[in-house]
Amino acid sequence: MSERLFDLRGIYYAHANGRRVLNGLDFQLAVGERVGLLGANGSGKTTLLQLLVGLYKPLAGEIEAFGRQRIRENDYREVRAKAGLLFQDPDDQLFCPTVAEDVAFGPLNLGKSRAEARRIVHDTLAMVGLQGFTERITHQLSGGEKRLVALATVLAMQPAVLLLDEPTNALDQETRTRLLWLLEGLPQAMVIVSHDREFVAQLATRTLRLEQGRLTAA
Image (tube, rainbow, N blue to C red):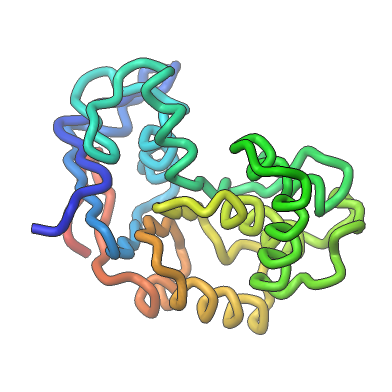
């Protein structure tokens, strides 16, 4: 069996209003896998991604990530360095005045020098097709441009896993095609939450559906 990056067993989770969204869920992600995750609005797809990096904690069940069981907040610091979460709304991810500052934030936090961070910013923006955007004001960008900058902030951390929440939101057809080409060429394992079935079908190595709190093959 391939090395497991995530192994979730018997996960239960309910929102503050008491509505249960995960009901004994099991999930595994192996090295090199690209898992598409489908499901209706409110079925818990985003919740699952946030559980993987410890932004939410399960009511019951076990989460093993990168070979270790994760329980406390301190356990998840390593996970967040190795699993990059692309939020559904880029405004939740972008908080610096300029594009370069947003993309450099993660590498600097990981202890990279300013020179290394500048190189990473240059290379990562080129990767997502945003050369020349370093000094652009982030909040003045279009929705699609923000989406690509948010992806650049995740890729700049060089994570082992990409957790992508509706990555094609606000993208025109040309940018969506470029994103698909980019992601297909990356070595990282991925979990792709999307309503864009065609995008998922082209990218994922297997596809699951989240329904009534559990995952089944789609």
